[in-house]
Amino acid sequence: MQRWFSMSNHEVKIVLLAKFDGTIILLEKWEEEIPVRTGATTARHSLQHQEPVLRQTITITRDTTTDPISYHVTSGALVLSFRLVFLRDLGPGEGDLAFGVQELEEYAENVWAQV
Image (cartoon, rainbow, N blue to C red; front, side, top):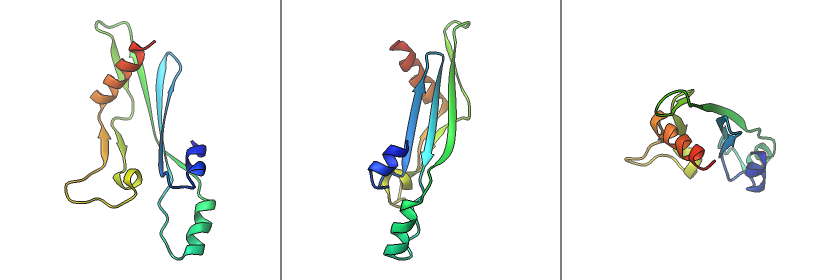
Protein backbone atom coordinates (compact mmCIF):
# COMPACT_ATOMS: atom_id res chain seq x y z
CA MET A 1 0.00 0.00 0.00
CA GLN A 2 2.72 2.44 0.93
CA ARG A 3 4.45 1.68 -2.34
CA TRP A 4 1.44 2.90 -4.34
CA PHE A 5 1.52 6.21 -2.50
CA SER A 6 5.28 6.72 -2.61
CA MET A 7 5.96 5.42 -6.16
CA SER A 8 3.25 7.75 -7.49
CA ASN A 9 4.92 10.69 -5.77
CA HIS A 10 1.73 10.87 -3.72
CA GLU A 11 -0.49 11.42 -6.77
CA VAL A 12 -2.44 8.30 -5.75
CA LYS A 13 -4.70 9.23 -2.84
CA ILE A 14 -6.64 6.01 -2.25
CA VAL A 15 -5.52 2.38 -2.29
CA LEU A 16 -7.82 -0.61 -2.01
CA LEU A 17 -6.18 -3.86 -0.95
CA ALA A 18 -7.92 -7.21 -1.38
CA LYS A 19 -6.44 -10.12 0.55
CA PHE A 20 -7.64 -13.68 0.11
CA ASP A 21 -6.43 -16.62 2.16
CA GLY A 22 -8.93 -19.26 1.03
CA THR A 23 -11.25 -18.81 4.01
CA ILE A 24 -11.91 -15.04 4.04
CA ILE A 25 -11.60 -11.99 1.84
CA LEU A 26 -10.26 -8.93 3.60
CA LEU A 27 -10.70 -5.53 1.94
CA GLU A 28 -8.75 -2.56 3.26
CA LYS A 29 -9.29 1.02 2.15
CA TRP A 30 -6.25 3.24 2.73
CA GLU A 31 -6.35 6.99 2.10
CA GLU A 32 -3.94 9.85 1.92
CA GLU A 33 -5.57 13.23 2.36
CA ILE A 34 -5.23 15.88 -0.32
CA PRO A 35 -3.22 18.61 1.42
CA VAL A 36 -4.44 22.18 1.69
CA ARG A 37 -2.04 24.24 -0.42
CA THR A 38 -0.59 27.09 1.56
CA GLY A 39 2.51 27.44 -0.58
CA ALA A 40 4.73 25.26 -2.76
CA THR A 41 7.29 24.63 -0.03
CA THR A 42 4.68 23.80 2.61
CA ALA A 43 2.75 21.47 0.29
CA ARG A 44 5.90 19.65 -0.83
CA HIS A 45 7.02 19.23 2.79
CA SER A 46 3.63 17.90 3.93
CA LEU A 47 3.56 15.31 1.13
CA GLN A 48 6.87 13.86 2.24
CA HIS A 49 5.67 13.33 5.79
CA GLN A 50 2.10 12.23 5.13
CA GLU A 51 1.07 8.89 6.62
CA PRO A 52 -1.68 6.82 4.95
CA VAL A 53 -4.70 6.11 7.13
CA LEU A 54 -6.69 2.86 7.20
CA ARG A 55 -10.24 4.15 6.74
CA GLN A 56 -12.24 0.95 6.32
CA THR A 57 -11.83 -2.80 6.73
CA ILE A 58 -14.38 -5.23 5.33
CA THR A 59 -14.28 -8.96 5.97
CA ILE A 60 -16.21 -11.32 3.71
CA THR A 61 -16.74 -14.91 4.81
CA ARG A 62 -18.31 -17.84 3.04
CA ASP A 63 -20.87 -20.10 4.70
CA THR A 64 -20.85 -23.51 3.03
CA THR A 65 -23.43 -24.95 5.46
CA THR A 66 -26.27 -23.18 3.66
CA ASP A 67 -27.86 -24.14 0.36
CA PRO A 68 -27.07 -22.19 -1.70
CA ILE A 69 -23.72 -21.11 -0.26
CA SER A 70 -24.00 -17.68 1.34
CA TYR A 71 -21.54 -14.85 1.88
CA HIS A 72 -21.40 -12.52 4.87
CA VAL A 73 -20.05 -8.99 4.63
CA THR A 74 -19.01 -7.03 7.71
CA SER A 75 -19.08 -3.23 7.84
CA GLY A 76 -21.66 -2.63 5.12
CA ALA A 77 -20.92 -0.83 1.86
CA LEU A 78 -17.50 0.08 0.53
CA VAL A 79 -17.45 3.79 -0.30
CA LEU A 80 -14.63 5.39 -2.31
CA SER A 81 -14.37 9.15 -2.11
CA PHE A 82 -14.92 10.76 -5.52
CA ARG A 83 -12.46 13.49 -4.59
CA LEU A 84 -9.68 11.01 -3.74
CA VAL A 85 -10.28 8.83 -6.82
CA PHE A 86 -10.53 11.61 -9.41
CA LEU A 87 -8.47 14.28 -7.57
CA ARG A 88 -11.11 16.97 -8.01
CA ASP A 89 -14.27 18.18 -6.35
CA LEU A 90 -17.67 16.78 -7.26
CA GLY A 91 -19.50 18.16 -10.25
CA PRO A 92 -23.25 18.19 -10.91
CA GLY A 93 -24.72 14.69 -10.83
CA GLU A 94 -21.50 13.13 -9.48
CA GLY A 95 -20.98 11.32 -6.19
CA ASP A 96 -18.81 8.92 -4.27
CA LEU A 97 -18.39 5.41 -5.64
CA ALA A 98 -20.35 2.98 -3.47
CA PHE A 99 -20.30 -0.80 -3.59
CA GLY A 100 -23.19 -2.19 -1.54
CA VAL A 101 -23.32 -5.43 0.41
CA GLN A 102 -24.97 -7.27 -2.50
CA GLU A 103 -22.19 -6.17 -4.89
CA LEU A 104 -19.54 -7.25 -2.39
CA GLU A 105 -21.26 -10.64 -2.00
CA GLU A 106 -21.24 -11.04 -5.81
CA TYR A 107 -17.54 -10.11 -5.82
CA ALA A 108 -16.88 -12.78 -3.17
CA GLU A 109 -18.83 -15.37 -5.13
CA ASN A 110 -16.67 -14.62 -8.21
CA VAL A 111 -13.45 -14.86 -6.16
CA TRP A 112 -14.38 -18.22 -4.66
CA ALA A 113 -15.48 -19.51 -8.07
CA GLN A 114 -11.87 -19.10 -9.26
CA VAL A 115 -10.37 -21.41 -6.59
